[in-house]
Length: 107
Image 1 (spheres, helix red, strand yellow):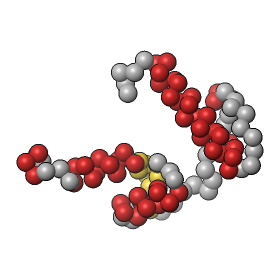
Image 2 (cartoon, one colour; image 1 turned 90 degrees about the horizontal axis):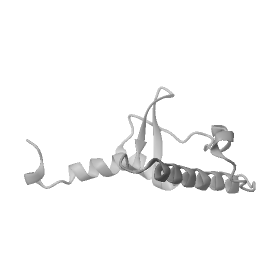
Image 3 (tube, one colour; image 1 turned 60 degrees about the vertical axis):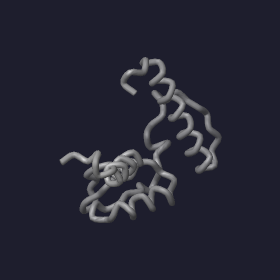
Image 4 (spheres, one colour; image 1 turned 135 degrees about the vertical axis):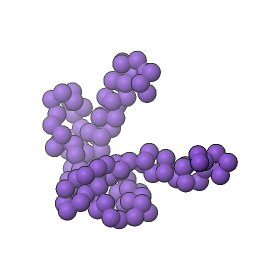
């Protein structure tokens, strides 16, 4: 993604923002006004209450929660404090490394 021109990155960010904004507006029964992201506060589009998972839970639990709630990122908490973020990409990478054929594994 770092090889993409800045305008392409801005386009994807703008598109993702508008999709998130529309989902939030629909969920709250409001009409989406597609305002410029510069003027919209995070609290207007974020999911509340925060969907998070304790760091001592299993990866299976995390992937199940992400699937159930239709989210791609899941804050990991310890004693109620966010200590990291788990993404779908992290889960895919973990499975890919785990299932890699033996002859490709590093020794």
